[in-house]
Every structure is written in structure tokens, then in C-alpha cells.
Image (tube, rainbow, N blue to C red; front, side, top):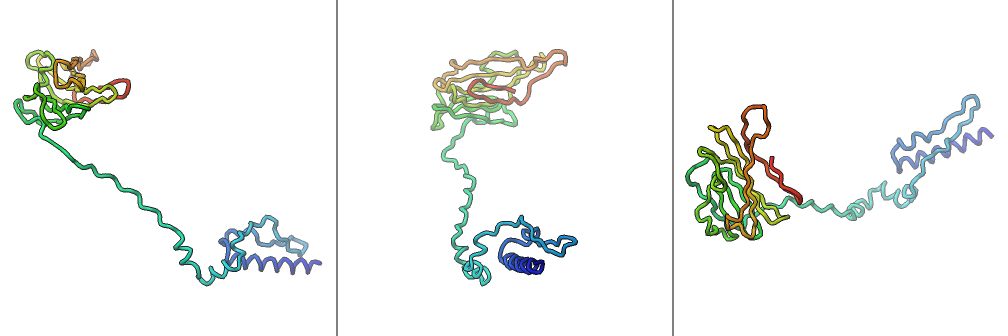
Length: 238
């Protein structure tokens, strides 16, 4: 009976090796090798053999893999993945000259601006102006306004660093700029809210002046290069 078991095990081993030649990698079959039980002379086949895919046992597929026939057909059935779309390039469709360089000249100009539903609000060092969508200045801005003229400052104050955004949640422009007076050792952050519907009329602008140094005990400081952002709840200046 021991000889019969050995013979059956050898046949099973030969079948497993034949399948391994056309099936999964050798590493899959390594754990399925027969092992001898010490002291008995009987070879026992492990019971945790991996399941053989049905495609491996299909004679037609085995013959095709051995001969290479059908490789082109299988390859032609695989459709190539479409190429990912590239980045869209912005294209300028319209432009116009806004605020021209005029005294007092400031370098750098720091141009900024935003487009609303009706108007375009532009600012530079040290002027502001409003234009319609065709590029024509509103009558009140045929000559751009000086930033300092939006609110009263002591003599000798210098204005700089304008920023503009359009808050589409409230249909308002927000304009900020900085001002400093070295003699008085004072600094200000100026915030102006501008309704888009009446942006062409500066008298409808709401302008507020905020001290730029609100921290006591560290000597005179002055604000520089502000940041400006907004969401559906508030406007933030840094």
C-alpha cells in the first residue's frame, strides 16, 4: 500500500509541475510540494493547494500561449486609455490702457484692479479710477483720483500699496491702501467699500481709516504690504 501511495503522489506531483509550466509563477506552487513524513517512508501531499484558474486548464488557451497564436487578437481588444486633457491656456480677448503714469510718480507702480458686473475699478501707486466695460473712464474719473483724497490726512502723509477685489457676494468692490506720516510717526490702513451699481460716483464710497500700529509697548511701527481676502461672511485684511 505504501508503494501505491508513493506512485499516486508522484503522479500528482508530475501533474502539478506540468500545470506550473503554463499557469501561475513558480512561487505560487512552491508551498504545494510533497513532503516526507519522518520515519514512515510515506510521502504526504499537502491539503492547502492553491486553486487552479479554469483558464489554465483550457487546452485551447494552453496551446495558444505556447504557440503565441492569438496574442495580436488579445492586444487589439484592449483600447488605449485616452490622453488626459492638457491645461487650458488663458486667452486675452480685450484690453485697454487704464491709469497712465502721472505725478507724483511712484516706483513700483503696484497696479491692481477688479471687474464687477458693471464697472472696472483700477488702482496704482498712488491713484484710483473707475472704467466701464468698454474701457471708458467714468466722468468723475476722467482724471484719476489721488488715494489720499479719499479721506483726510495730516500734511506730509504718503500713500502706497493699493489692493482691489470684487466681492460678488455683496456686489461691492473693496479697495485698501496704506499711508504713513514719518514726522508724526503714524501709520494707517485705509479700507473703502464701493457699490458696483454706483461705483462711478465717489460720494457713494464708504471709506474708513484704521491705525496701522495697534500694539503698544514696542515703539512706533508702520503697516506695509497688506493682504486682502473675503468670503460670504466678511472681508479680511492682513
